[in-house]
Amino acid sequence: MNKLKLNHTLLSFLPILVCIPLGYQLITNIHFGGFKLFQEFLISAFNPKIDNEIIITVINRLNETILIGFFSWLVSIIFGVIFGILTSNIFYKIFNIPNFFNNIIRVFLTIIRSIHEVVWGILLMQIYGINFSIGIIAICIPYIALNSKVFAEQLENIDYKSFESIKQINAPKISSLLTLIWNPIINSFKNFGLYRLECSIRSTVILGLFGIGGIGTNIFLSFQTLNFRELWTYLWSLAILIILSRLIFKKIKFNNTNKVIFIFLIVVFFTTILFSFSYFLHFVFNNNLENFNSVSSLFKSSSDLRFLDFLKLILETIILSLLSTGIAISLPPLLIGFFNNNTSKILIKIFAFLLRLIPTPVILLTLLTFNNPSLSLAALTLGLHNAGITSKLLFTNLDSQDKRNYIAMKSLGISKKTSWILGLFSQQAKSYLAYCAYRSDIIIRETAIVGVIGSVGLGWQLQESLSSFAWQEVTIVLIAYSSIAIVGELINGKINNSLT
Image 1 (spheres, rainbow, N blue to C red):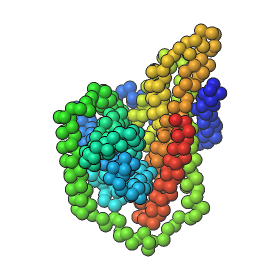
Image 2: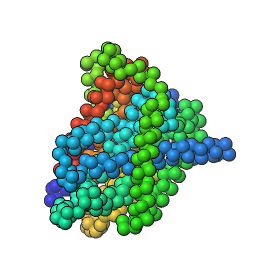
Image 3: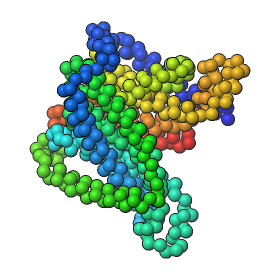
Image 4: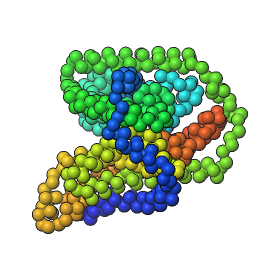
């Protein structure tokens, strides 16, 4: 058992070795001309711009962000529940429907989930132009698929004996289904659904950097004009919004037996479905599709992509994912273990919060002020952002863990760092790696964001193909990008299953 724990502990630290080739390329690509700008960027964090005009702008932009984020979240949760039920085995057992339909829906959801919301947003903007609705639709497409997967997994945990008991009394099938799924759905919503609202707001901010609207657009415009004081005003206001949303989530409690809540949820459920369908039909049939040139252009136009160049882009995307995942896995335990004192922990938590707060494109653009565009720079950016997320989980688990082994080892004269690794972290290593395996799925999809900004991988090629309306190239890139994400999800699923 101790050997097994040690193996998981070592596996948590080994990926940091990716920093050796990564660091070498970053050092060779460094240039000192932008250090003054970088210094100004950091100093401005302590001196944000505050006046009446910018406060009004912040309020208006936050309202837009909340509006896009909330409706994206609401629609994706509700349709996520629907598709979660349609892809659960319990649904097909109750209604005696062949599993063939289940497989078709699962494949469809896997494909749309494999493409990041930023890719959907860029694609839809190129077809329909910049539109407020694009942000909602772009977020909803992958989020519905992701939410449905989570809800379906929870429904798979339903005790089969409960289903047999209800079946024996010949209860109506619809009421049987609702009876079985109600508690798992509500529990999943409490544990996962509310967190997805924060994710939806973050996605809205990132899409805003590409022109959708909301506070993300102002963040990008401030960075373009090098108005860092104004930039940090928007970032700190976003931080306040995220902190307040978390406090509100903690106060929200659901009583599974409360009839008022049940009726309210049913009304919201069906109202959102009707509104979503009518809105989607209005959007599709009342927007200009001239930029698309026609579907036939996919088959008529020839692609300028060379096979070897395309393979290089795929390889870059895979390497980018691996390097970023290595940083996201190993950096948090390495820093927490090495700087194992209360002051250092507070500083690490603040730094991790800033890495989560600042949108990935802004981090990359900031680093580009003193480093040339490269695969290593893109990997560092994506790795640091996700390290901020994995460190939050690690801190939470370590704080709630029994510390008796750690205290006992320290009392025996074992060094503080060794005691932390063997007495605390070794007990968390397995679950931490399991979460990192799940997180790596997201990292693969997020390579598109840094790819577009950092001119690497399939993300860069997608942007180039879209700007020249080369739809055949776009289709090829999307298929390759989706395939990488799906294969990565399957591999990480196997890893996750072996760790849980």
